Length: 407
Image (cartoon, rainbow, N blue to C red; front, side, top):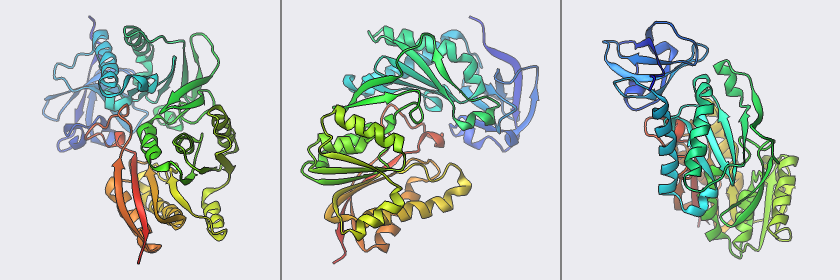
């Protein structure tokens, strides 16, 4: 088969490429000594160390500060159609190996760098696939990858009814790519019914956030079910009501979900009705940071408080302000937890490291005179694998605490 790698060579500066050599997937523009040969942005090129030692091959894009995204670390620097097929089938096999069969109904099939297909995300919602392409190089291989993915699913009896593209993230601009969303192939109803942890949802793959649903919290939502039977629960930043509905289906006495988005609340209410939980699980459109003090003034308290905020930082430079944000929201949440109740709190920013997040929660607890007993520490679900040395693949930190008053 034809080698897709161009006869062009990127040479790393002496002393640079430390992240790459440790197992990372990115080479930044300031790490490159020279680029030799003819190529177009998005082509696959060879990568050599400063002394000519072959380090593999990856997509090049001179529009991006991430100048090369590694596709292979093989010294032979060969990428063929068969190579891409093996990557896709391997990603599917990993999900089959690690996840219960019923969870394959809705899961992430390809998670970019962690599945060695940099810049590509593909999610499965029943028989619908949603694809997000974030890099020029992978964009060129997208049709081939989707064909192989459909073949892999078909080989195990899973049909693909349709594919929708949600390549509308702002980060595409950094790659010199335009925002795009639309059907790949035949059109279909973009409101898709799924079941996760026994909870039914209608996922809007066209208008929902990201690819329509946050699959990464799958098992964290399941963990919440164990705590909520007979409890009064507050779910902050509820989005489509996911944690709230898991609490409700587990037998919570009452659940209140808060979100600033009227659209998200309307989706959550529809999902509550779909599960027959509309009498138990209620939602309110409100700014969580403003609403929590109001609940405290009204002398409300809860057996379980869940904090699932959006990423307070999307850059290393903004981390200091993010720490303040996480500390503030955890202080406000902790004040509403009854003595002996539970706090579930998380961060979805990879810049907020595990150590930093734990330290911030500790500071919040100390400030409001609460003591924390850690019940469980979790990360993203198994279909979002964490590739060591590729820091961007490890982003979700999720902690459950038993909370007691200082006495």
